[in-house]
Image (cartoon, rainbow, N blue to C red; front, side, top):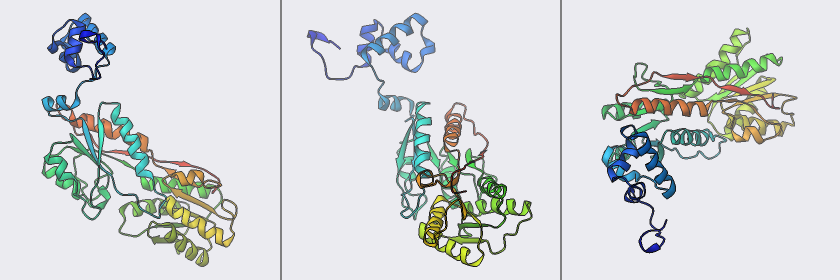
Length: 343
């Protein structure tokens, strides 16, 4: 915009520029940005028109100093695990960033040492760099939530308080048992009765939760699970080894896997045996990864509602950061089954 002397300034427009163009005081412009209800309708319209013409953007840093709010939400980002097909966290982060932006918040991703579940939180908390946190790994024992509560930090968790049933903090989670159950029910409806399970080791709360859904569906239909379950690491090579063992020992007609990573391992085993996926044997995965969507003929997979989870988490954060603050109750969401050629 033209300034004094008719020159065009490269500097961004300031609050003073808006005040001059609108013919009001700087305080009036500040009220228009931060407390519009204090202004008369015609004055507010005049200031907003000046803001639009100049392309003025409020200084977030200065506003943070005044309000002691950063409008940033801290989210610890785990490192991608090699040898897996799991990109669920990536999909969740994109959904959460988008949902947060719609309410005026931005997401600050930070890294922490995988061996230390508390690494990264303390520095951000002491520097007041964020208004709140989203904790995503509550299945690892709840150290983060306990530590944050002890320091009166505000947070919500993507994941139920597995080891703290009386916890009062807001949380959002996905019913994993239901996901494995509908996957197994789908195969039973397709005429399968000898359905194997390939899951994670017994110390995995997430794995055991998913396994319980397979067991429930099988027992509901009077089907045996004896010799049909395997526990292993979440890697493609481990999935292949587990599939080889089960196929040799019990010859199931279908397999349900605790992850798409394990399902990919099963596909490797089937390829070596020249078994046709979806024809000679059926396979269902979990997480509905991009791999499941792209590998021919497509892997039927349980799809967690990550977009809905992100919206629910942002809603809980808004209530938590409001004045007065409100801690919303936990929310449990149900996944859906995406059916493709593998089943």
